[in-house]
Length: 190
Image (cartoon, rainbow, N blue to C red; front, top):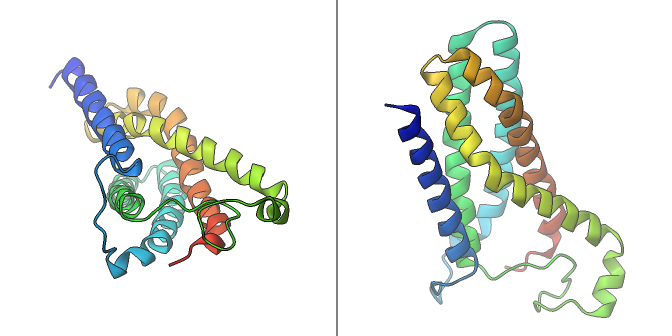
């Protein structure tokens, strides 16, 4: 496979995932009227997957720093699989459930002045974290895919150059995913 093919493949997968998230998250395809019972557990599952991926990324870093390439690869493959499971769970939840608004204490989908006042400036902190998390999550996918390709092909120098960007962004996204969950979970009403 040529680099040109790989870049096109990564771009196609990245655009496809972005479009699926956009279409389902914005409910451009109507969700079923009956919400399956398991959906209420997906946010907690997503936080656990993100937290596990954060730890695995740090373990992967430990192994590569100690030149244990086999364990580094295995941990990264596991992390990639768990992140993929997270993506499916995330998309499912946001497709099947109505949007949860930060600070919506009564769950009516509207933030009253009293609810805004109750959350205060923490609401802005939440939105800064959420916005950076979403933007970086969208941008890190092609980096992850290219890093994986380079690593599996043992193109070590190219892999190292990519991972200098991929690793901190991916780690940030997984950690902030847990933080976003902890901040929004009091406002889930199901």
